[in-house]
Image 1 (cartoon, helix red, strand yellow):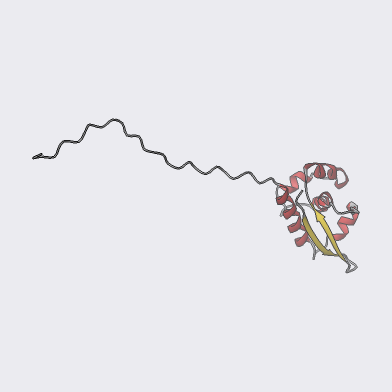
Image 2 (cartoon, rainbow, N blue to C red):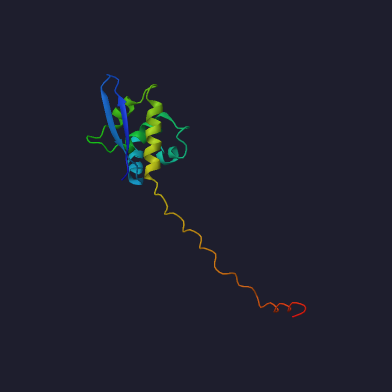
Amino acid sequence: MKTSILKIATSEGIGKELVLAYDFNAIADAEEPAGCNLLAALESLSDISAMQLRGLLFAAVVSTPKPTILECGELIRVDTIAPITTALADAYNLSIPIPPPAAAPAAPGPVLVPDAPAPEPAAGV
């Protein structure tokens, strides 16, 4: 599982580092305590409610001990919304499997030309 690191200062000024990662089960499990649709929130991180932001942070945290949903909410302040949203987007992007590279197009082979009439002999030969 690929992870994103969120470094944030708590309201007491104490540095906190959270390891974030997403999988479908984490999102589904966090919807009940969050009380909202988190999957819909992932479609547009720039247009989400406060409950969805708090729930997405709660769902993404894989650090131990895992903070409660209320503790996640305490980390979200005016000065932390942007870095939290960026870290959540990074964690989500890292959770999407990268498709294998497409096979390179085959090198062109010989060009087959239908039978053509033989060339005319040169004049005077």
